[in-house]
Length: 432
Ligand code: ACO
Image (tube, rainbow, N blue to C red; front, side, top):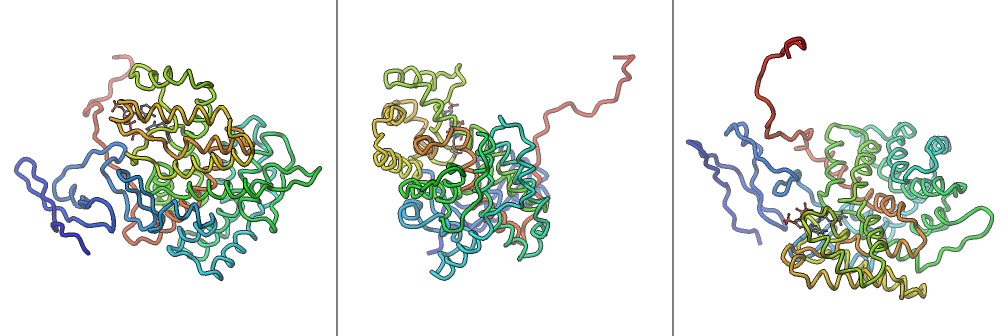
């Protein structure tokens, strides 16, 4: 049933009164459309960090931060994590509906047959220093894809957009695995079409040519679930970066590279690496109170990594699934007494009882447990954020495609509240 909302909101200031149209979304708060505000009222709105600003219309992902709910195209994340697979989720995000069996087979075949990289790209990898962070390599190589795949850079051709989409989803595992292989000085392992998406990624990371490597199905299932949980998350910083880059009509590879760059920061995708490093630094359960106090001390820049979220003011639903996965994976590997997992669980328990965290509604986010699983699988911390980027590519490209097809799309160009010097005349250096 449609909500009963007023058609307009009235903004009054000075002797002006402006009526602004309102719209009602399928889910979430109503929206005041301020597009004509500057033309009619000669004022801007000021909203650093976009805390109250919708930058686009989107039908892909929905978050209810108070309830702790995340939906991909309407489907709850816990149902998808339990019952679906990452490639099916990719299809859902990109095309809007769950695929039929034939559609899924066709999509899987198309992705599987695009996993190889242009052979000349191996030279590009070799140009990096061995000690380069894998995120630096992934960011560079994804950006460089536009130099290798010219036939999918015309954003106005729907077929080229489709090919770029498949290429990005198919090649990101190869790029991330090769960034890792280069980093550790091992030969690149080529993708294999007899393995599924997650198996293939694990194989490209951990196999070596000298011996056979079998992917443990428990690990590939956990990997697939990690990909699903990270696939999309509404208009977060990196997705907004992809959209902003795309709004200038830049090619899809350049836009996704911009998303990778933004994801790298420790306040966003880099938090999984920072979180595991923090848990290791804490080391033992008895040191937790000391770190809780540091996190609460305003004079100390330390923050509890993996805690807090701009939108969730309740449990991050992905953190719950991730916690279950951590128990499952470590249990099945026979390392349930892993000290880092013990510290994480106790830290969560203490923080959730603490008045500071309760009052500020700070709960564990997706990154709190993901690092523990990835570490148990054998990934170094530097690979955590590339794995996040691999998964989020599905969301980025879906959002980019949605934006390109939106007739109301314009180049993104925020305004500012200028606080610099007013007009002044140049003074020659001899008179200064
Ligand atoms: N530890 C201690 N205090 C915190 C934390 C934390 N992890 N997060 C927020 N706070 C406090 C802030 O100091 C602030 O206190 P104040 O009101 O007294 O000034 C209050 O809670 C609100 O925090 P903001 O930083 O204003 O909230 P914002 O929405 O801007 O930040 C963010 C969200 C960046 C995720 C923040 O919670 C954080 O830095 N968390 C740690 C990093 C992290 O885990 N990032 C991953 C996010 S999920 C993702 O990107 C996949």
